[in-house]
Amino acid sequence: MSTEDPGFQVALHEARQGSREGGVPIGAALVSAQGKILGQGHNMRIQEGSAILHAEISTLENAGRLPASAYRGATMYTTLSPCDMCTGACVMYKVKRVVIGENKTFVGGEEYLKSKGIEVVVLNDKDCRDLMTKFIKEKPGDWYEDIGEDE
Image (cartoon, rainbow, N blue to C red):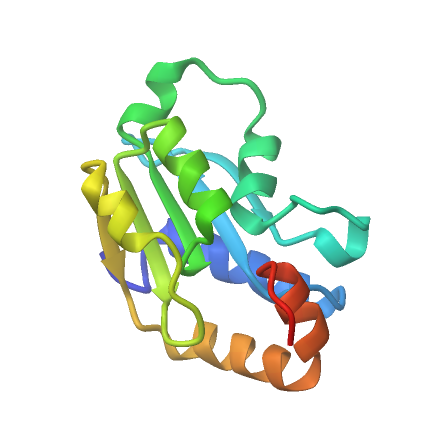
């Protein structure tokens, strides 16, 4: 797994799109075992006034209804370590692998994913880290709201 993987590049593109829209700059892509993009999306909480549209949830929503077998060999690419809600969605659908752009600005449910047999790969991507660092510095209130914490 590398930052050159097409799935990761789609997730990073989505994160940049979220940033351009004034939202939380986190993107994701769900890719089948055969390399087909099943869904992609970015955090839309601010744009849609949503409580739950994190990048991974937006991606699953955009993928639409899929048979359970579609998730079994799939990889969820996400630009930031997934929160508990997004971790739970990956566990529920039994994705095979979660590839994370960075986990320096936030560490989510990585250990829980591993405990459920899901492979976790952290790329430590500078672009992902820079997007999040800038957002957290400029909009701390929106960031803490996004992760369900008070400033």
